[in-house]
Amino acid sequence: MKKLIAQVNEFFKEVGAELKKVSYPTRAETLGSTSVVLIFVAVVAVFLSVMDTVLVKLVGLIIG
Image 1 (cartoon, one colour):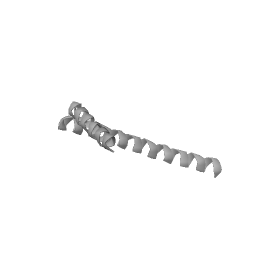
Image 2 (image 1 turned 135 degrees about the vertical axis):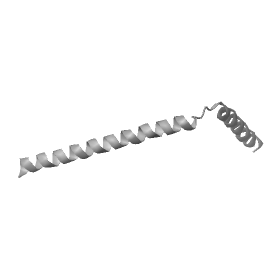
Image 3 (image 1 turned 45 degrees about the vertical axis):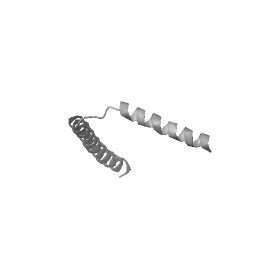
Image 4 (image 1 turned 30 degrees about the vertical axis):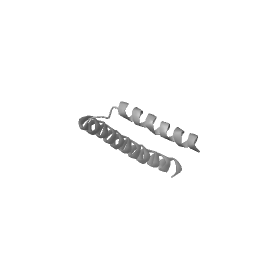
């Protein structure tokens, strides 16, 4: 049991050491990345919507 507790303590010490090495983005970097993602999602949503509309009309012409 003591060995397990020692291993758990060692694990958390190593986790703490690794967390000190982490480089977090600045607020500006986070906002920039978020805006790029939101713009990309909007562009893809519009593209898929247009493609869906075109394909629905095309299938309607073929079937109808």
